[in-house]
Length: 436
Ligand SMILES: Nc1ncnc2c1ncn2[C@@H]1O[C@H](COP(=O)(O)OP(=O)(O)OP(=O)(O)O)[C@@H](O)[C@H]1O
Ligand SMILES: [Mg+2]
Image (cartoon, rainbow, N blue to C red; front, side, top):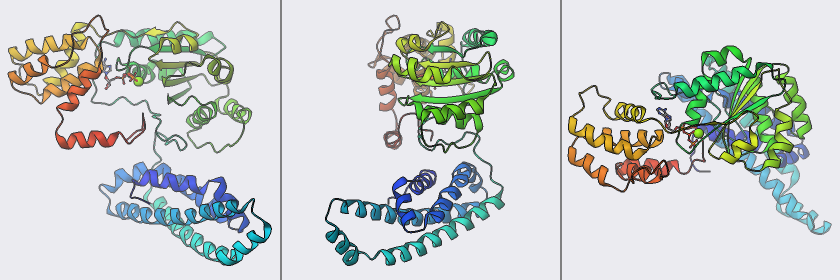
C-alpha cells in the first residue's frame, strides 16, 4: 500500500475491518470477535486524530504515538487484506466441482494453518492497537468538534466562517433570511427555504452567516449542517443527519424505515434547522416521494431546512417558502471586497492603481469569487505595468451578469508560481468539497 495521510489510512482500515466479506472469513475462522474489537477500537482513534495532529506540533509523545499508529495501521491493513484475499479465493471456487474444491484447499492452502497464522497476526495487531488506544486516552485528546463522516469523507459538514474572511454587502440578505426562518415558528410541518444563485456568489457564505447568527442559535434547539454536493442518496443523507443530531456515529445498516425510526427518536420534538449545502438534485420524484416525506415530518413546530443551490429548478422543486435569490454585490461593496484583499497592508493606495483597480472590479460584475480571486492576484503585484497587463488580459467586461468566471480563475492560476501550480494540481486528486 502506498504512503497515505494518517486519517484516510485509519479510516480505510476501519472500513476494511467492517467489511462484510472480511467478516464472513473471520466468522468461519472463529476470529470474528477480534475483528469486531479492532473495528470498534479504531472508531475513537478516528474521531480524535484531528486533535492529535494539532497536539503533535508541540508534544513529542503524541508525535511518536502517531508514528507508531501509522505503522500499526499498515500492519492491520495487511492482515485485513489477507482475509479479503482468502474470501476471494474461496468465492472463486464456487462453481467448480467439489473434488476440485477439496483438492484446492489441501494443496494450496491448509485451512487450519491459515486460521492459526491469521489468529496470531490479528491478535498481534489488536494488542498493538489496544496499547495505542490506552496511550491515546492518557493524552486526553478531544473528539473533533466537526465530526468526520466515514462513508462520505469528502462531504463538508461544518459551518464555521473563516475568521479572516470579512463579508461585504450581505447584511440585508442575512436579516431577510433570519427573519423568514424565525417567522416559521407556528408552522407544524418543516419549511424549506432555498438560497439560489450562480457559483461563487456567496450562497454558502450567507447560509453560514445565518446559521451562526445569535438569533438562529437562540431560536433553534438543534442545528445541523450537511454538504450534499452530488450525493443525494436517501440512506447516506439520513445517516448523516442522525449522526449530526447525536454527534456520534450511526452504525445502523438496513432499510430506510429503520433509519426513519431512528431519526424520529433523535430529533423528537426539537425545533431544528438543517442546512443542505450545495444541492444539485433536479429529480423531483427523489425529493417529493422519498426525502421530503422523511425530512419534513420530523421535529417540533418551526423547524426549517435551508438549501443552497445554483439551479433555480432545484430551488423550485424543494421550496415551501419563496426561494431567496442572491444577487451580485453593489459597485461599492465590490470595491470594498476587492480593495480589502488587494491593499491590505495599510499603505495608502496609489491613485494610478486605484483607477486600474476600479476598471478591473467592474469586469468582475459583483461576483464575490471573482473579486476575491482578482484581489488576491493583484495583492502581489506592485507595478502599474503588471496591473495594466492583467486589465488587458482575457477577462471580458461584465455583460449584465452574463459572463464566465472561468477566465478569471484561469488567469489567477496562470500567475501562480510553478510550485504553487503543482500544489494546486495535487488538489485535483481530492473529491469535491473534501475538507483538507
Ligand atoms: N459578501 C462576501 N464578501 C466577501 N467574500 C465573499 C462574499 N461572498 C462570498 N465570498 C467569498 O467568495 C467565495 C465564494 O463564496 P461561496 O463559497 O459562499 O459561494 P457559493 O455561492 O456557495 O458557490 P458555489 O455555488 O460554488 O457553492 C468564498 O471564498 C467566500 O469567502
Ligand atoms: Mg456553496
